[in-house]
Length: 104
Image 1: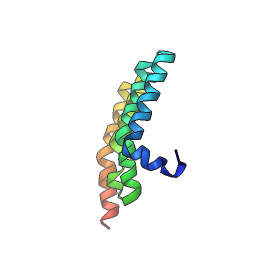
Image 2: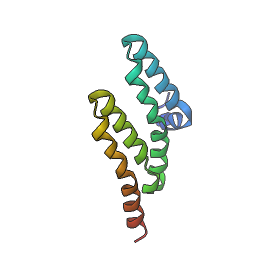
Image 3: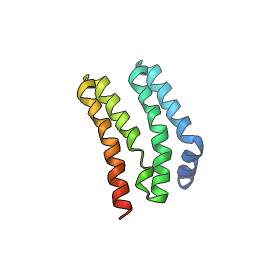
Image 4: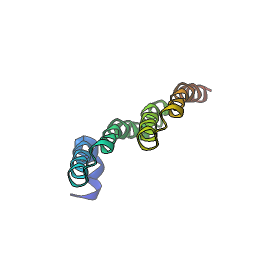
C-alpha cells in the first residue's frame, strides 16, 4: 500500500478494521480482553478529530469522549471512580469556553 493513500484508507473504514485486529491479537495472545476493549472508544474520536482537523471548529473536538476514556482508564487502572467523576463537570465548562471564544 502506498503511504500517501494510508490516511484515506484509515478514514474509509480501515481504522476500524486495524483496531479490531489489534484487539483480537492482544486478547488472544495476552488474554487482555477487558482493558483492551477501551480501544474501541477511540473510533468516534478518530473520525471526530479528522473533522476537527479539516474545519478547525473546536465544537467538533471529541472532548466528552476523551473525558470518558480518561474516566474509565483511571477507574479501571487505579480505582479512582470517586474523584474521577469530577472530570465530567468540565464538559459544559469546555463548551461554554469554546463558544464564548469563537463568538467574540
